[in-house]
Structure formats: structure tokens, C-alpha cells
Image (cartoon, rainbow, N blue to C red):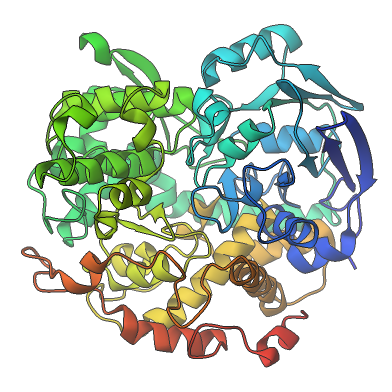
Length: 609
């Protein structure tokens, strides 16, 4: 049995915002053993304490910040933490993962996580300075963007790490995120809106301690081996550092998998190179940047000069944001794309959902479903100026920007065409077409938090050929590979290391670091089973919440009909649709679920439920 002091600090902070009380309590080590940490452990606490039918923006909801046992250690890219709650965008259980330095700093202060309950009667923030934990007034911070609020808190408290929301989160924008270190994001699902609903502006932390592991010598041997593999691999040792995640633009475009014009067009974009990582390096890149304990350094510090209203300094974009404001909107102006990403970071908005919702609005406008007077100006594919303007309106909560802030599903439903929302469970799908890349389509459909690419990254085998090359156009073998990837990703998110490490390392390296950190004698397979347990826990919560329940298999917001019925018109995947139904049957069999996607009693017993 694992114990405190071995990867874990052994203490949680519980904050009741309604009455202002703060309590420190021992970490539930049995749950930490069963559900690992971060995403898994936070979800376990949440599911035990919160009614699945809760309104995500009600005072009765809770929001949990949770680290993993490798967070803050010397493990490879051990800077991750998760924010867990019921997502207001989707209604699903959501664990939004972020990097930077905030998670390790919380561990250094002596805490594994924070549970927030209730709602404050005025804006507040939580201040942690080692043993000192206090709620302070945030009235002067309310209404400030992420960068201004962070600067004000650093000026007041000195050398601290800050996680905060912008004004969209304060207003309850459904896909508002939580930003730490200014530009790192717990970005998807609307965790920032949950914070805002509680009048919680920020969490500020300073820690002067460290994280002990069970077997220091053996742990460092595992870390050294894994780091050597990362540094020698062409993706993690060179590609991501040189070009960031935008390196994927041309790669994905070559296989015909870059969704164009809200998924209406494709499957090859002749302007892709104008928005690529290569072009970003030639134009706006200042330097690359890494998170805590990272040897990859995929982050991009970027600057725009001489473009008038586009000028600015910030970070990004990541590949998915570059796509949502690029190919999805038909915009090849890289400066406009970078500017939109700056706005999203400064105000704490998910650029995948926002850019995709703008793209959806463009299609609705062009087909005549949205009158120009509703928007205030024409909104056509390829119009960079209109895209930037609408993004700013969304950030400011002005005019049609309020509608954009509801996400593409609610937008398209309002105008009579929900089928034009490129989302699953009301969350926008990222930058990979499920018709050209069959496994990613299955991933979107089965993800426990809606349209998502980081809950089992099938792009690795289907496009990058990692760890094995799979033909993206076929369905054979995709279900089994996805199940393995989903379980491994749940484990990766939960130990507290970056998903990008899995381009080079796999279960042996992840399990090895975890085992020596916490003092476990479990086999690799037993450790991977924890990932499967986490996946099934999330699934059960969603079913109890009315999501993924019933014969539809998908609940109230299934995959877009476009993926299933509209064949790609051109490119390497010409004529292809998503063969989802074929893959689903195999997927449920691989999971040990019924034909309707319900975990069987036998499977639940195997996992210890």
C-alpha cells in the first residue's frame, strides 16, 4: 500500500466558499492507490461527493484542483495537474489538464490538491504560502483579464504561481478555461465558468518544500532512461522543440485530415503551409519555452509587430488553435490566427471551441441561416478581420459574441441547424477529420468528455506511425488500439506527466517512474489497469448524469451527421465517411461492455467497483 511521503504530500485543502472556512485533511491513500492521482483521483473524490444531476454552475457543485504523484518530482515533464468538475459545456465529468509550474508549486507548499465547495458572496481568491492558507478579497481583481490579474497578484505576493480566470469565466461563458502562468491552460469544458460561478477569481501559491519519492536511486535510474529516450526521439527530441505542435499542420494536411470550412470542405488545403509551424518560425516566433521539468520545450513565445490592431506579445498558437482559426475558418493570415490566440489566452477562453464556433457561424451565415443584422457585419469563410473582431466581441461579452460564447451546438441549434455543429456531446472536435483518420473519429465518439483528441491520441499510430504505423483509412484494429491508448492516457494524466512524452515512451517507462516514486511492487499491467478503472469511473458518472445513456449510445448530442454521411470530396481520403458503427461494436467488445456501451457487471467486478 502506498503512503504519504512517497510521491504524495498526504494533505488536501478543503475550502467552503459559502462560509469562508478552510480545512486541511489527510489524503485518502486507498483512493490514491486505486485511482493514481490528478485526473483519476480528482474524479474519484468528485464522484463520491457530487450528485451526477447537479447543475454545473450551481453553488452545490464542486471544483477540484488535483496533482499526481509524479507532479513536482524529477519525472519526465512532471509539471501537470488537473481541474475536475462537471463541465458546463457538455454536462459530462470533466478533468481539464494543464502544465506550467502551478501544479509543482502546490506540491512544494505541502498539498496534493484543493476541493472548493459552495459560493462566496463576493469575489475572493485563495492564497497559499506553505502552511498559511487564506481566502482574500478579489473585488479589485474582478473584471481584470488573466494577464492583468496575474501581474497584480505577483506584485502583491511576490514569487508566486497563479491560476486565474478572465472576464468570460466571471460571466459564465460555457468554455471559459483556467489559466496558470499566464499562458498555460486547463482549457476545455468550461472549468473557468465553474470558478466564476463561485466568485472564485484565482488560486495563488508559493511553496518552499520538495517532493520525496520512495526509492530515490531507482527512481532516478528510471527517469534517466526515459529522458534519454525522449531526447533521442525525432519528435520529442527535435520536432516539437523546433516547430511546436504546429509541426502537425502540413503532416495532417498531407493525409487529407485537416478539416476545412467547418468540415464542409476538404480534404486537402492548398494554403496549409501559410499557417504551419515552419511559417510561424519564419515570422512571429521569439523563442520556444518549456513547462516544469520538460526537456521537449514545445511552447511558442510569439510577437506581432507592424500589423496595427494585431500587434501583441504572447504564446502560441498550439496546433489545434491554429487549425480552428485557420483551416476551419478558411483563414490563411497567420498574424490574425496568432492574434486570436493571444485574445483567448489573455481572457481564458478555449480557442478550439471558440474558433470552431466562429467557423460554424460562418457556415450558417453563408447559407442564410444567420441574418447579417444579428452579427452586425458579414461573416464569411476567409474573412480574417471579421474573425478577429468576433473573437474580441466574445471576450468582451458584447453583441453576437454572447451567442458565440455558448458554443457551436447551442448556436447551431438556435438557428435551426444543430447538425452543423462539429461537436460530440456539445464539445467541439479538434483538428483531425474522422473521415480521413478513422480511429480519431471513434475516439471523438467514445470520449468521456465529448469531442477530444487528448483522451487517446490516435494520431500517433494513424498519422505519425507511433508506436506502430496504422493505415488511417481502414477500421481494422482501431478499436483495440484506441482502448489501450485511452487507458494509457488516463494513467499518464493521473500520474502528473505530459501526454507528449508518450510520443517516445510508453507503459514501461511511465509505470517504472510511478512504481519507484510511490513504492509500489505492481506490474506494468496492474498499473495500466488503474487507467482502465479511471475510464470506467468516468463512463459510469456520465451515464448516471444522462450522458451516453440509452440505445442512442451517445446521449443527446451524437457525432455530427456530416462525418457519417458526407463523403470527403477530394484528396487522399476522397469518398470516405466515418465508419463509426463498424468500429463501435468492436470497441465495446474490447472494453467488455454490452452492445449498447454499458459496462458489464463482470467488467466492473474486475475493476473493483
